[in-house]
Length: 355
Image 1 (cartoon, helix red, strand yellow):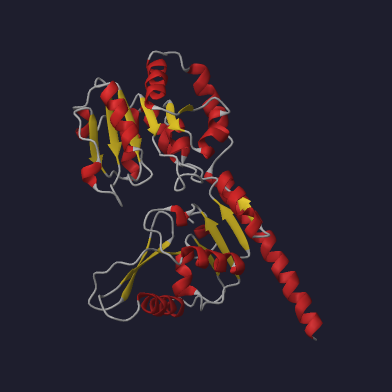
Image 2 (cartoon, helix red, strand yellow):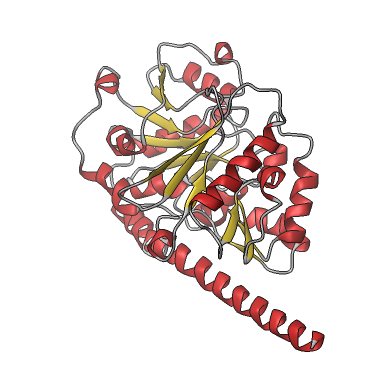
């Protein structure tokens, strides 16, 4: 979106906040990216939420004279308050199988089918998700998440340890991300029990699960949420990065962005057998896949005892050289332009047939 803001105005509509006496849009323009960030603030009134969001969206379109535009959806649920709009084209950027997530709305699947029928082009956030969705749309393409390499490369040179991490001894095995039903609590608990001398540093908010279910051990450190800018400092102090996801429907199609981010930081990675981590990262010898706590311990031991990582790091950098947000944006934009041209040709043909 920051790259698109250099070509046109971008309005990114966030989830609503329920904290207002009267409904209103809070609109700010990010000076660094140029993206207009729209946060709907709703009161606790009795009128249907989607009707109120529709009114706020209509007022946004009118206030900013948005006449010739593209709609870009990250969630089918947004159809409930935006299906009255008449964009030039619709993009569905399908980043996850949202219906498999805990507390997913019952209407999500039917709304996704509707969004597929309305969309002119569909992108998926990974190869497995593409394989699952490709039969549902005639113009669908996989675009795995990219990374801001320069940002995470900082971890390779950083020597500063954050205050809440300084007291934690080594070796450190770290994770950052949302800690929810996808996070393998039992795996972390068992490995931490087997190796009480290893320190597990966990960063991120706890959502959709009871925090009381998290294992409380002296060598497991739940440090809470950190900002994007803080992550390289934490990463630089870790010996191993981990992706401890359970294997179920909610993780079957995920493509964790943290995989290439960890690698950009120059850190060895241990992951459970997530499809989009095994292919391509395990196949290329960049990431270690484990399937049990015992295998985790054996793998981590090998990593911690291997002090010559020059060849592996060279392979990592060779792979990372081929991915970037610029390339992702270029590919998406090219696909959109091609689709737009086809729409214009079809519209012209329809006009000629009508005449």
